[in-house]
Length: 151
Image (tube, rainbow, N blue to C red; front, side, top):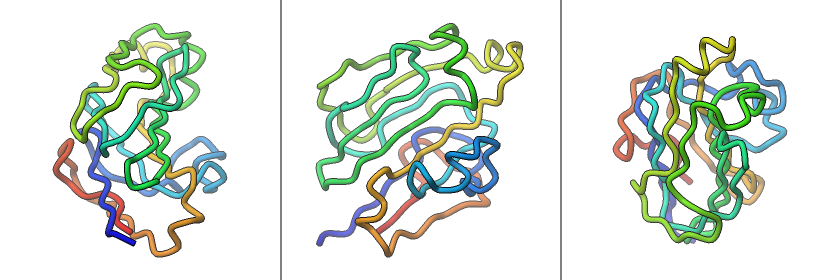
């Protein structure tokens, strides 16, 4: 198996999933991964792959990586309730993307004014297939440059 490296999908401060206030992500039930606190409002693809999940509410996107890794990127906690307000999607279902391709932009002010957190979660939904996954947290990340998950 080839080494896989997932870079941060946006700029911000890398934190462990256990620090996310959403219990489904914090517990690892949605897969292992990491999160970005104090994020900038532009999410890019961490891998080459295909867009396989795209929520109408624009708050979450799934990508099947060319190496077989399945990634869910979820912007904020409870932001589904915004019904797309403050979000702009830059890809469509089935699109092929390269690492660094812009996926979604979001307005942090809209999220905060609605009373929600804007922490961005990156979970590997098939993380059981990657028992040796290593996470980098506790540092500032640059989109497309800082390795977050390696396996």
